[in-house]
Image (cartoon, rainbow, N blue to C red; front, side):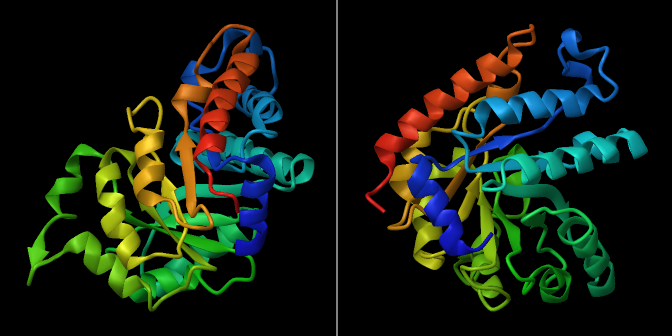
Length: 272
């Protein structure tokens, strides 16, 4: 999916919602226990009840990889199902990869060729040659970790040298590795007030913003500080949607939570 298609999807649905499929096998509703693959069955129902409201899905691969081959199969089945049944969705592998060049090339092949993900999250710590194997693939994106919402973010991301914070250095340097058509940035919602500074450095790039919902980030503040003329935001909510209910009504409740977010997003979007 390219930049124009992504903007068109946002405009058509009046939404910039990404549903995070952090599908912890230990929390899958008991009503799915008899399914051959309960995690996939759970994901399928969540997707079918939210796809008309969301423009993206993000699979945190740790929730699948921890289950070995069975988890990997659930992940493959999920991304293939989304692409077959809801082909207008932008699907993200939240894998946080990043290694020396030839290893990154193998990661890129795994997620962007062997599976039909549109994008993968990448850690920039090892520099350019660990990131560029993920870029310049037709219709595919790299989503670079820049300013995260976790407590430990302050350990490194705000370190300063010559008046420049490390996350600012990441944004400035990485603009040479990709452009707004193949690179996005992860910016945590709990750092919403800093989105204006981020926008000054990357005015045209999409920002993937986790932390809205269960983590307490404010959607309105994210939009106020981070939205650009084309929207430029993909806002993720995971637990607040997919685990809103663990009864047999889990998918219906997920749809209701997604609808509430989509309605708020519609009021915040510019006339694209």
